[in-house]
Amino acid sequence: MSGGEQTLTGPDFRQGVSVAELADGAMQLGHVDGEAVVLARRGDQLFAIGATCTHYGGPLAEGLMVGETVRCPWHHACFNLRTGEALHAPALNPVACWRVEQRDGRAFVTEKIEHAPLEQGSGGTSAPADARESIVIIGAGAAGSAAAEMLKREGYRGRITMLDADEPAPYDRPNLSKDYLAGNAPEEWIPLRPSDFYKEHGIEYRRGARVASIDAQSRRVVLEDGASLDFDKLLLATGAEPVRLSIPGADLPHVHYLRSLADSRAIIARAKAAKRAVVVGASFIGLEVAASLRARELEVHVVGPERIPFERILGADMGRFIQSLHEEHGVVFHLEQTAARIDADAVTLATGETIAADLVVLGVGVRPRVALAEQAGLQLDRGVVVDEHLETSVPGIFAAGDIARWPYAYTGERIRVEHWIVAQRQGQAAARTMAGIRKPFEAIPFFWSQHYDVQISYVGYAEQWDRIEMSGSMEARDCTLAFHRGEQTVALVTIFRDHESLRAEADMEATVAQRLRRTEKASTRG
Image (tube, rainbow, N blue to C red):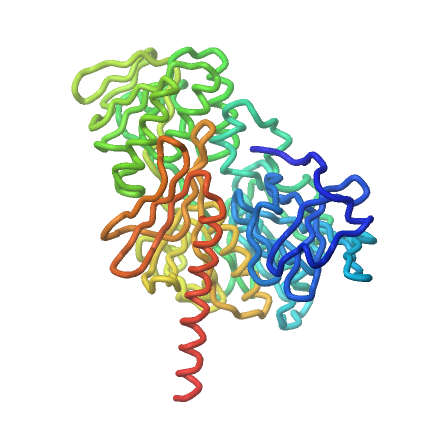
């Protein structure tokens, strides 16, 4: 995690700047009363907002303007230039706004306008909810917590209950394998909200509440302790769980999985006394863990069945680059290998080779938690099948996040992805629909993976591709990989080319919007 405060640079906007020198669609970084501010121009309109993204503190002045919005270059959060509202996750809080006055060809930034975190909504037309209505959200991860907040932002007046089988408050899960595990981020950065946030905003948050069953016909959720909750609408946001190995020794005390905050804490505690670690699984989580453990100066070995890490997802060249990046930092790979046994001081591979280890982390993938959906009779297909509004086969029951398989508007295929930002945005979209604002979920998937000082950004979705075109140089940490299927670019992977990543996302969104407009026109003519 990188944080927050920027050194004040650029002009003092209170003293005014020339409007003519700020081009249409351009942004300028300056400051007002000791705070970094971005001045942006769209046509004859001028906007002034806080210069720091409320997610991880990214520099908005280096982002991309799209219409009357600005997108953060780091992790693609999006803010409304007029209101400062956080339109797209991962940012949850708005940025501050200032009034701008134009006099004699100069722009002057004047008084500051601030908003409470849940003060603003999308401006859509929500159906007024009866205060007796009830929405139950099962799961308080990325999708569930984002949905609860969006319901309040959209003015939903009914009862909102969020059920969480995990004990801590909703937290920043991506950081568990990155800076927090590496020791570069304190634990107080991990919770998404203060402990009293949900109560203050009228959200009933039940920790440690495990759901036993869902009665879809009678609209009731039954908890394991025998209590029950009636609902008018339900959001399933149960997420995914680690795939567990069934080899001898997989349940030993020094063997860990990484999914929850408790898991990350346990690995940190073990790492303090450990010297040699084996990571089983060359997945994104596995290699982020490897990088974090190297930051703690452990000897790290990675075991994986693939010939090249990430070849199926990122292609062979990028896979080799990531492997070499880890090898430069001392990680030893054992590829085309599987673990056969774990003992107190070693991991034995299927070939008979042994690797000394006093810490083992298993990261061989996750599977969606669909047991409740299956019990409730929802349609399943390698996940929970939902429509473009994230509604399941049972009206009034929605699914979002790792479990949802939805119709992807950009390519027309039905997909399921396990990305934090996608889950947050789906939770927000489902909440708007439940609040009466029916808009299809059209977001383009985005995720990032951190390996030492290199961030790899991925926009789009490419389970299959025909060819990969590369520009730039991986070795120079400056490149773009475009994944093509036929004539369509289905995904873009970048290293330190944030603007290209943002532009690709915006272009894909524009393609979806054009396609929907054509469909609507054809429907109207019909």
